[in-house]
Image (tube, rainbow, N blue to C red; front, side):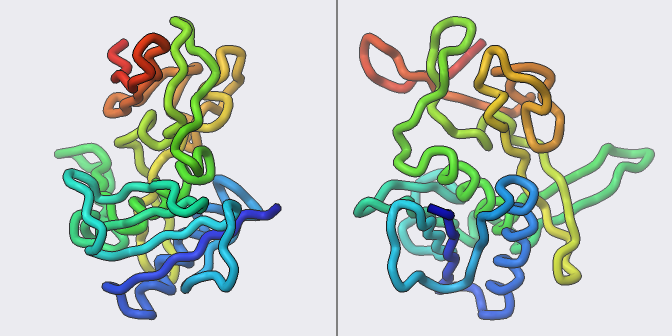
Length: 209
């Protein structure tokens, strides 16, 4: 069944929400062609429907966004004020600094959508890495801190990098991520992070290697 994304907001106006949806569709065309985003709420939701709420409700300490499995459906919350500017900010490289990116509501929404597409029930793990550990399937976390931009409806939007399926396959071939930054399987970005399932305790532990 084709997956669809529905995005609503009780904090952004209709025009801004329409621009966010347009930006998400640019992102999805690059990550998962065939998956489409729409504004509003679906008439009939099911596990193939991804729901995203841009809000200040359902706050989660320390997070600008998160996703859960609620009543049999993947649901994400983007906390607009914590996420920052709607589209983000970009400064090109110059003599004083390299490229600079400020993430955004768009980036947070895309981050959560990418991870819901990979792990809708928040309980899916990768194949074993070289140490036999299975990572929680959170492909944006692994390459966190890497960004790209596109202009959508006249707005320069900052988007997140996403690890691809080849990333968590020891025999995987490049590209390992959307931007081509990662050079091999299970190689996180400089700011990337991951958790693996401890087979003894069944608890999540941070990957520190």
